[in-house]
Every structure is written in structure tokens, then in C-alpha cells.
Image (cartoon, rainbow, N blue to C red; front, top):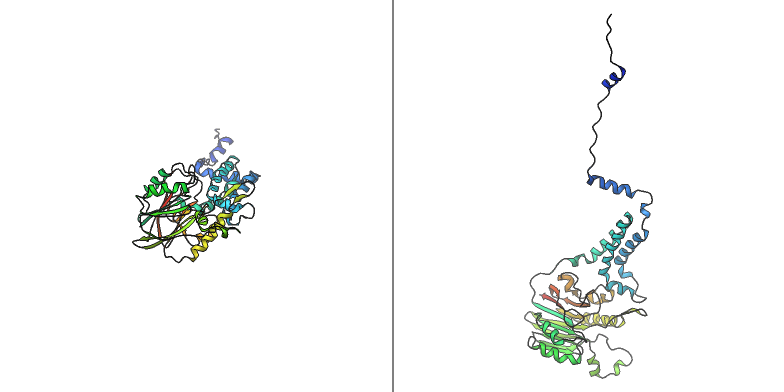
Length: 365
């Protein structure tokens, strides 16, 4: 009797088992990276890494955002911060490197605040806003009382092509040099105290401007010639083919930084307040202010002036236009400010024998 053989149990089980599912291809690296970052971010304790870096990033952003509220009561710290405010941005890459080294997501995210604030304050200065045109070129230069080559400085300034040139910190011994070297290019000029103006166009009504330079109980007892010799501001009118242009040449009081007094700005701040009053009383249609203001326009002390005139560098310049010190400029303290005219361009001129760089601008109306 024949027997029909049946499949063995293992064989039968194999015959009825479902086909194995295909193996999934590994996710691309670009898709795995966000998952890996998320996985690391939620690891216990990762948000507690580098708290000093996180706090420093937030503090940096808040200082830049609220710089106007940094108190000036002790050592004029607020003005010091505002003078060098653009340089605070250099702390961002330093903190970023530390955050990456410590693998701190919190510190990286905290850096968004200072980056955003810095760009809102100074991002506009990174673009070149200059354009062709303009009717007049003006320039200003603190020539430096210790300038070893005033003749060379004068020749360099004459070669700049400026139609109106303002000089500050002119000494008695160098005045004749500037007058002689600039005479060929500028038939009109006036010097009052330590400031002067040279022009290719006629000048009129030149007079000293009181910016409260000489104060105190003995100021009124000084003879007029003594007060004039120390004068640091003048006003004149330039006759252009488009009408009169009022020009101010100003050299505000110096500032000092030392351990005892901090950032000392008393004389400068007194001068800038007086200058603000002078500008407010001047009803001229077109005004140009040229000079060494010994401060950045970010400094709150200048609010009374910047509310009335605007910076040509900020409106039509390329970059920050730092002018001091000449060897390694870190701040723009030499300014061209205007009212009633249109800025076309602004730039920094080559170095001279002074510790300041000259600055120039093209304006029109």
C-alpha cells in the first residue's frame, strides 16, 4: 500500500510565511542632521551648559539695544559705550566660537539678540549709499597742533578738489604756512582763533561763534583779543550760484579717559549744548557744519545737534568712515552735518601729518 508523503513541518511553515519587508534605505545626511541636533538639544543638562556664555550674549544684546539707558552718572560710562558702540559687534564671533566649542545650544540661540540689534543699528552703514551728482565738495580736517608737516598737509588738502575747506587746531606758528600753501587754490579764506575756512567761492559775514569755550568767573575780564585767540568756532556765508550757504566750522572741547575721572567730557558737552542753541536760532535755509566734534554721533550728548542736522556719512557714505586716530581709526569724530541740502557722497581722505584723517563730502540742492 503506497503512502503519500506530506511536507515536513518546517517546510510547510516556510511555504506559508510572508515575504520579508524590504530594508529601508538610510536617510540622507541632510535629513539626519536636524534630527541629530534635536536629539542632542533635548539631552538632559544640555541647556545648562556654558551659562556664562549665554548670559554674556544676552547682556551684549541688551547693552546695545538699551545703550541710551546706560547711566552717565559715574565716569560718563554711557557716552563711552556709545562712542565705541559699533565695535561691540566684534564680541559676537568670540561668543559664537565659545558656544560652539562648549556645544551650548542656549548660547547659540542667545546670540540672535546681539546680532539682530547690531544689524538694526549699523547694518545700513555696510552698504554704499553714495551716488553721482552734487553741486559742491566740502572737506574738514583737524590739522593737528603737533603736525610735523603743515605744508605737506596743506598741499594734500588742496589736491582733494574741495570747494570749501575747513581746518581746525590751527596754531599761530602754522597759520602762515596754511595761508601761503592754500592761496593758489583758494582765493578766499578767514581764520578766527584756531579754526579757519578756505573757499574757491566768495565768503562774507564771517564771525566767531560762542560755544561756551571760555567760561568761569574770570572769563568776562579777559580782553577781546585774548578770547578771540582761543576761539574754536566760526560762522560764514559762501556765495554759490544756487544762493547763499551758511557754513559753520567747529572744534569742540577735548575728551579724556583716565582711571580717576573715567570718560571726561565736560567741556565738549558744554560746547555741544551751546552749539545746539546756536543752530536752533539760525534761520538759514541751507546749513553745513564742518569740524572735529570729539565724539561719535551715537553719543547721547549730541542729540541737541543731530535733531537739527544730519550726517552726510550716514546718508550717503560707504561704511563707517572712521577718522581717528589716523594710524588705526576706531571712531568717526570728524563730521560733516547738513540741513537744507542733499548729501550725494561722503568719503575719508588720505592721511596727512595729523593724528586725524580728513573727511569730505559732495552735497547738492
